[in-house]
Length: 71
Image 1 (tube, helix red, strand yellow):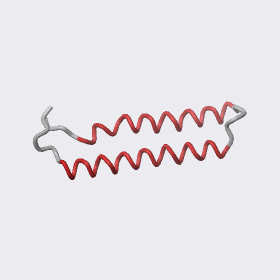
Image 2 (cartoon, rainbow, N blue to C red):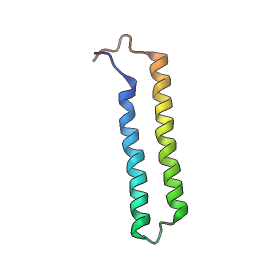
Image 3 (cartoon, one colour):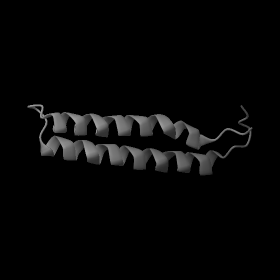
Image 4 (cartoon, rainbow, N blue to C red):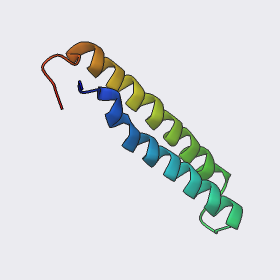
Protein backbone atom coordinates (compact mmCIF):
# COMPACT_ATOMS: atom_id res chain seq x y z
CA UNK A 1 0.00 0.00 0.00
CA UNK A 2 0.96 3.59 -0.48
CA UNK A 3 1.92 5.90 2.34
CA UNK A 4 -0.90 8.25 3.34
CA UNK A 5 0.00 11.52 5.05
CA UNK A 6 -3.42 11.75 6.67
CA UNK A 7 -2.54 8.82 8.95
CA UNK A 8 -0.10 11.11 10.76
CA UNK A 9 -3.00 13.37 11.72
CA UNK A 10 -4.44 10.99 14.35
CA UNK A 11 -1.98 11.84 17.18
CA UNK A 12 -2.81 15.53 16.83
CA UNK A 13 -6.52 14.80 17.07
CA UNK A 14 -5.89 12.71 20.17
CA UNK A 15 -3.96 15.56 21.80
CA UNK A 16 -6.66 18.08 20.91
CA UNK A 17 -9.45 15.88 22.26
CA UNK A 18 -7.46 15.10 25.42
CA UNK A 19 -6.89 18.80 26.11
CA UNK A 20 -10.55 19.63 25.61
CA UNK A 21 -11.80 16.75 27.76
CA UNK A 22 -9.31 17.54 30.52
CA UNK A 23 -10.29 21.22 30.60
CA UNK A 24 -13.99 20.39 30.58
CA UNK A 25 -13.52 17.84 33.34
CA UNK A 26 -11.55 20.22 35.54
CA UNK A 27 -14.13 22.94 34.98
CA UNK A 28 -17.04 20.66 35.86
CA UNK A 29 -15.24 19.39 38.96
CA UNK A 30 -14.71 22.97 40.08
CA UNK A 31 -10.95 23.18 40.42
CA UNK A 32 -9.82 26.58 41.69
CA UNK A 33 -7.45 27.48 38.85
CA UNK A 34 -9.96 26.52 36.13
CA UNK A 35 -12.45 29.18 35.15
CA UNK A 36 -14.45 29.91 32.02
CA UNK A 37 -11.53 31.70 30.35
CA UNK A 38 -9.30 28.61 30.75
CA UNK A 39 -12.05 26.41 29.35
CA UNK A 40 -12.55 28.76 26.39
CA UNK A 41 -8.79 28.87 25.76
CA UNK A 42 -8.50 25.08 25.72
CA UNK A 43 -11.55 24.68 23.48
CA UNK A 44 -10.08 27.17 21.03
CA UNK A 45 -6.59 25.66 21.17
CA UNK A 46 -7.89 22.13 20.65
CA UNK A 47 -10.04 23.17 17.73
CA UNK A 48 -7.22 25.13 16.11
CA UNK A 49 -4.80 22.23 16.61
CA UNK A 50 -7.17 19.86 14.84
CA UNK A 51 -7.79 22.26 11.97
CA UNK A 52 -4.14 23.21 11.56
CA UNK A 53 -2.92 19.62 11.56
CA UNK A 54 -5.54 18.65 8.99
CA UNK A 55 -4.48 21.54 6.76
CA UNK A 56 -0.76 20.80 7.12
CA UNK A 57 -1.11 17.12 6.27
CA UNK A 58 -3.49 17.83 3.38
CA UNK A 59 -0.92 20.23 1.91
CA UNK A 60 1.89 17.72 2.50
CA UNK A 61 -0.06 14.95 0.79
CA UNK A 62 -0.95 17.13 -2.19
CA UNK A 63 2.62 18.41 -2.54
CA UNK A 64 4.60 15.25 -1.92
CA UNK A 65 1.94 12.72 -2.89
CA UNK A 66 2.35 9.01 -2.40
CA UNK A 67 4.81 8.30 -5.21
CA UNK A 68 7.92 6.53 -4.10
CA UNK A 69 6.73 6.08 -0.52
CA UNK A 70 5.74 2.48 -0.01
CA UNK A 71 5.15 0.87 3.35
